[in-house]
Image 1 (cartoon, rainbow, N blue to C red):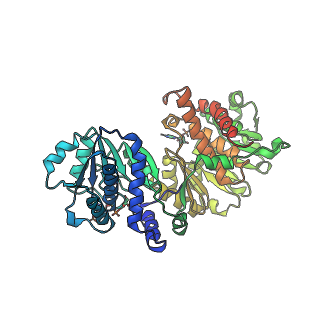
Image 2: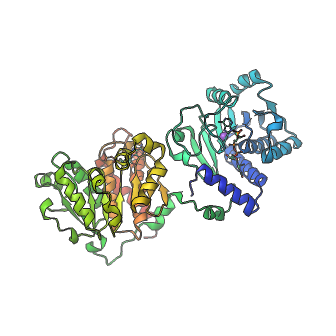
Image 3: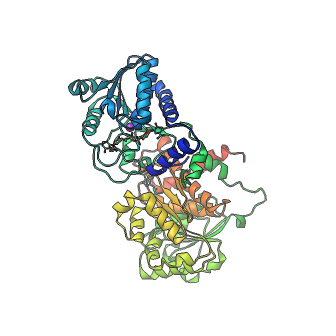
Length: 502
Ligand SMILES: NC(=O)C1=CN([C@@H]2O[C@H](COP(=O)(O)OP(=O)(O)OC[C@H]3O[C@@H](n4cnc5c(N)ncnc54)[C@H](OP(=O)(O)O)[C@@H]3O)[C@@H](O)[C@H]2O)[C@@H](O)CC1
Ligand SMILES: Nc1ncnc2c1ncn2[C@@H]1O[C@H](COP(=O)(O)OP(=O)(O)O)[C@@H](O)[C@H]1O
Ligand SMILES: [K+]
């Protein structure tokens, strides 16, 4: 499923209307009817419903929903913000259809006090005020209407976007509709996956309004959700006659005397995710500690690493930021025919060797959280968080690498500018060590998937699913430990494999 910016959605709409010939009024009819059908199971005959309509096409969708409600005899009031003559185009057409079908409306500017009283009596409010066309802070009278909706006790169902939320997300401080349900038209908008916008959507529903796929292809939308179906179709199948060497001979350079656990967690993540042979390079003082948790691995001293012996290198968890570890990053980068995964303290050192990235033959994957991304790019964390999609893509393309920008809705960006969003996982993962486990999982998958992209995306998806599994069955979001994540990988993998043919 594609994820679009405001500009992309507008271009897609335009293509559907002008090139394909699907008239805007038809799309509006599809939108309103599809939302109504999805809303219907939530409605009761005794509900008192207020449909609140703005001046653009979002309001036009509202007229279609109002007509559907009227046809099914729901007790509905339709409140219109602009004056009648301000409505134009498809919205005006659908207002006309609604009137000729027997509908009536009330204008908020004529009956402001009645509106304020009524909005508190409704059990359901349909928010068709502002959609993708919004820019900046809602102006009067929209802002006041939004505040009244937010103060009411009604269940709020938003059309396309909660009114006032910018479709592209990013920072905003003004008031916007706090929806209980949002019926997003055709495909998710960027706002759904960014902070603070995501918190306004309530439960999101995607509503098909019939825009043909060619419109997305023609606009070259390069961003989409990585879904369960993607995982099921790309999980590797083990060959019956395979041997350990066929599943990756990986070198994990991780851990320090202060952070032995990071090496253990990454190792455990890799071992639980199917790596064939794992060698860990940590300071010798902590071999015993780490090997207690990763008995299946072998160990190599930092001075004795033969980089060429491995199919891939993962570098960074708990490595330490001392100068003595920086040269390991440089060495790993300079063995440029071996795939390389860099995380945590490896990313700290990478900043000094960033020019080496482009010279490499074999792929590089980096897994920064927003703080690490900020340091790498020279931007602030706020700037990263406000432009997660743009900054991650620019970094991936400019340096020719895969960027896994972590957090809620991890974004995976490829060297050719494609982006994939993960929507699994929850705040149980907001705890030290879970990123180390993810590094191990990606590392193991790198050796076993047909494509590096599906390896990365599947690892991120499953890592999130493990957290969801734990909080659904046995843990709260407070008590999940990174080591619990490693222990629960098998049950989640088992469930996925049970659902595939092998
Ligand atoms: N196109 C299609 O094919 C389909 C589109 N569909 C629907 O159309 C929606 C997009 O429609 P849209 O482009 O008309 O924009 P919309 O969100 O209704 O609002 C624009 C109006 O709001 C105003 N406005 C803007 N900012 C404001 C502010 N801060 N404070 C106050 N007012 C502000 C702005 O006025 P202006 O500022 O330009 O004077 C303009 O009048 C989309 O979300 C979906 O629901 C569906 O029907 C399916 C087919
Ligand atoms: N609120 C959240 N919802 C979903 N996933 C989260 C959330 N917070 C953190 N995560 C995930 O947990 C992991 C944390 O990684 P990271 O910040 O590198 O931690 P560490 O290095 O301490 O292990 C990432 O995969 C991230 O996407
Ligand atoms: K809306």
